[in-house]
Amino acid sequence: MSTTDQFLLALQSYQEIQAELHPEKYPSVAETVEPMPEFPEPETAILPDGSLLLGMANDGLPLLFDLYDPAPGPLLVAGDGGTGKTFFLQSLARASDLQDPGDIQFGVVTPFPEEWKGLDALPNCLGVWPAYHPSSQEFLSRLVGWADGMAETRQAVMLIVDGLDLLVGGGFHFQHDLRWLLMCGPERHIWPVVSVNPGRLAQLQLWLAYFRTRILGPVKNAHNARLLLEDRPIDLSGLIPGTQFGLLQKNSWLEFFLPPVR
Image 1 (cartoon, rainbow, N blue to C red):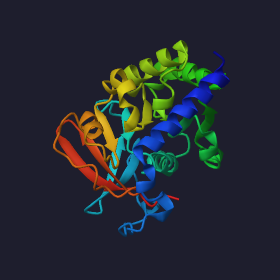
Image 2 (image 1 turned 30 degrees about the vertical axis):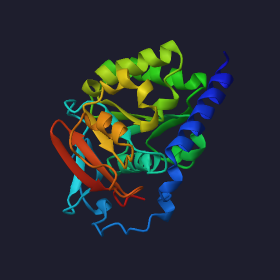
Image 3 (image 1 turned 90 degrees about the horizontal axis):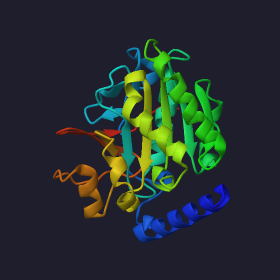
Image 4 (image 1 turned 90 degrees about the vertical axis):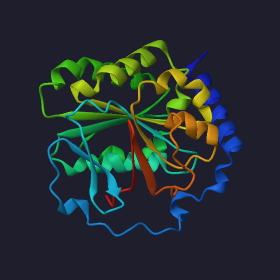
């Protein structure tokens, strides 16, 4: 099967899942009516080296992620269709530019590169690669090759995979390199940040085990929510689409709002 056929099949599956989940029940990000709380502009703050701004907690304090501490492991971002997963990933990409140039870089692998138009012009962007083009595999292989040398530097790289649920049927080498980066990347300052649609979790069970740290948006299906939360009694259905997420680590749960980063 050609890569074009694979893409078309994946896109068809994606559209079918979106219909099953009825994403129209959620407002679009642009139509979210609940105003975001007024937080200080993060540009005015000095962030610690290697810190990535995830968002602003309910008390107005910034929620930072230390890219020099591998303990949390790679990040899983999940939420129903239309609840802002890509918007959140894009906020991370913009937030990475708050550090000194070159300290935090990012690259994106996605079935929909047109959604990332403009962010590829940021000075710390390594590129945006269509998921079913050979260049995406070349990028992952390049990251694996960089890995050992990066552990001794101040540099960090975010590997943003926007839509892993559409890529599980990808080539062997792509999946092999991605698994290696999920297991070994954070120790070498390479951070996979991976989004999934909960409607396809049945095909992602083996991948979920790699993620101890999960950033979750609204999920209305109770079964999907339990899988993501590993049966913790947390209600994901009340989070504000496109604006609010929760950070799950071990037994801790912290809700936060997206940062006002432009």
